[in-house]
Amino acid sequence: MTLTRNIKLNQSEDKLLSTLQFIASKYPVESSSSKTTVRCAGGWVRDKLLGLQSDDIDIVLNNCSGGDFARHVYDHFSANNGKRSEFCSSIGIIASNPSKGKHLETATMRVMGYEVDFSNFRPPPGSTEDKLFGTPEEDALLRDFTINALYYNVETGLVEDFTERGFRDLENKTLRTPLESMKTLRDDPLRALRAVRFSVRFGFSLSGAIRAAASSTIIKDLLQKQTTRGRFGSEIEGMLTGKSSSPKAALDLIFELNLHNVVFQLPRDDNDNSSMTHKIAKTSIQTSDDVNHKDGSDVLDSAISSGWLDSKDILRTLSAVIDAIDIDGNSVHSSHRRHLELAKTPIDNRLLYLTSFLHPFRLLNYTDARGNIRPVIHFIIQESLRFKHKDFVNIWAIIIEHEGQMRILLHKEKSGTSCKLEIGQALHQMKELWVTALVVATVMEAHENPLERREELIQTCTSLYERTINFGLDGCWLVTPHLSGKEIMHELGIVKGPMVGYYLSEQRKWQIMNPQGDKQACIDFLKEEA
Image 1 (cartoon, rainbow, N blue to C red):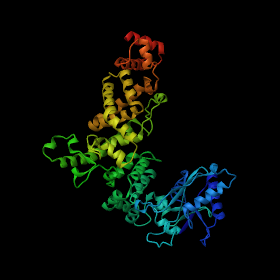
Image 2: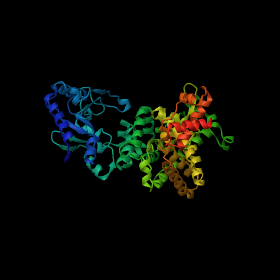
Image 3: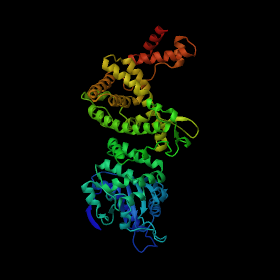
Image 4: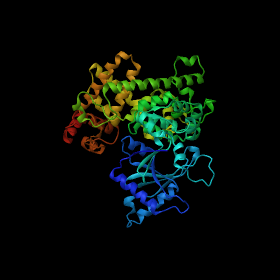
């Protein structure tokens, strides 16, 4: 065991941890001959050593369960003049589920402004029933990576490295498992994806042993059999939007480890496509001339294989486009910085990567349990990743509608025939997705055209963006119409019917072209039209 390096606590951390240590001494465990020692573990310790701030703290205990200690915390604050809710929340219990990689019961609560998880040291697999608690050394070896197997001892104020490799790997920026990598990943196969997320987040290299284990057939099979799809989604979400996220690097590494077809699982049975409840409908594939020379299964396999290759290529194109138009995650900023001051709508970086990555599968469908034919992208988003239905709706809208609209606008921008009304009407349909759709359209144009055209496409994209901002159209869909349908009927003397919709549309066009115009001017215009 190596005791080394102090962690500098801020005032609120010191107050929290001192309180927890006091509670440990106030409620001794009668069945234990040793006193309760409070240690912080995992990500909080790692982040503090890296100079990063975290409000999530894992507390591990040597001689009592997380649930028992959390109840002591609750009781302590409940006795504090009845103001418990000001200091801590109620207790949540996450039950153990070893078959899903959850080996210990964990108690969760918010304490003094921090999200705190309480658990005990995990005993080694195969321990007898009377061994409820492991030792710090045993617990450290069962953790995912050495950099997450560092402990802060609240009583001594020291960081403990029981694997004797945690600090070295942290300094060398290497992700390594405490035990043999295959054993550690078999313990919880999702650690293969956690390795990707941590590697990208911190810029750490994966050890060769982790790479070999993560890409093995054994771990991929265990991922499919033991890991709930929601856990896949949580890891991908962290790669797309988490701290220091880099979606391109994460997706590239998933490809390198050959995990893409496990993570972004398709509705397909390799043994018998036609017998699946969820299956890709062969007749739904928009095939090429190859369909005349191959049976349906071959065409399907070809479409899937080429789809993954296209996804990798589109990621490369997306990265080049983003670098060229200087997008940094949330907003477009060109050399003309003044335009940004007027912009309201950011790029949805998460949707941008999901849409671009899944774009090659837009022509594949599957039949769901009710016999409905749906896009395969629907299955990936909602079944494979358990993301929200709204994510699919937005991705599908960009692919099926908005991308095409933006391509038309890009071509008109290039030819010098862009007009304010046409752009404004497009934005009314796309709303807050318009900037994301613009980038997707540019990426797909760049993907489909020769490399020498890329710079021209980038310039056109930037020009269209800036023209839209200069026209004052960003947010135009948020402008309240001057007149409702009933008011139009009254002012124009018309009855309910299709003409009301027509004049509502004419009103919208007028307001796009006359953003400063008042209600009376709009009425006068509509009366002239009538």
